[in-house]
View 1: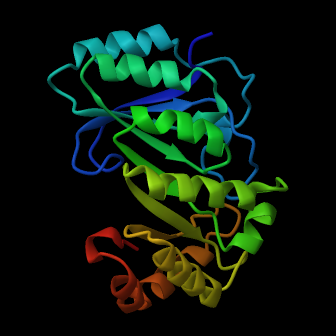
View 2: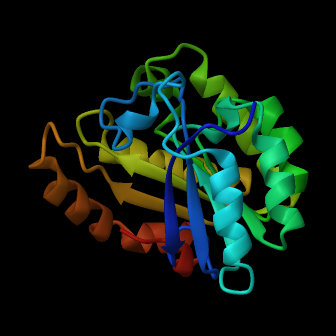
Length: 226
């Protein structure tokens, strides 16, 4: 079975650092984060928006125009077809990137040799992750994925979306310090855009901006964006 594709962004300048890229949105995710913005991608059984062959045909036409392809979701690693899709994209001459929440560390380990860049979402402080995702054991798996990523040498970035209703600013700061101590060099804290509580966005944005000195002390300044 080919990759189940829930959508395609034909050009992006922000999802793969330093490269012009397309984004393939993969269908299916085991998590149920309350603020998810891609809820239409959660159901793995939902009919695909595009056939994988259509995506490959599009990419054939963009050789020499695009630099890379990002696999996002949903959770791309939920699909066993991902390594094959990565290999096909690389065979066309494109660099490959992955956006993942880290739920499948062993699948990540298998995919890392086929990747040029990884964006890992660390959903929150380790004790909070299971509640945020709605899936027991998520935190342990994310930590394992982070360790594999740090050991791999593959270029990467960690991100944390901060929802003040789910954990405190002090917990976000503590997480930043812990990630830096583990060896993370690029981390992006970003305010949550929760459609259920739009008033939280401004407060979260202001608090993250106010913490810029700490973020820059711990991480490369270029990695930090509110």
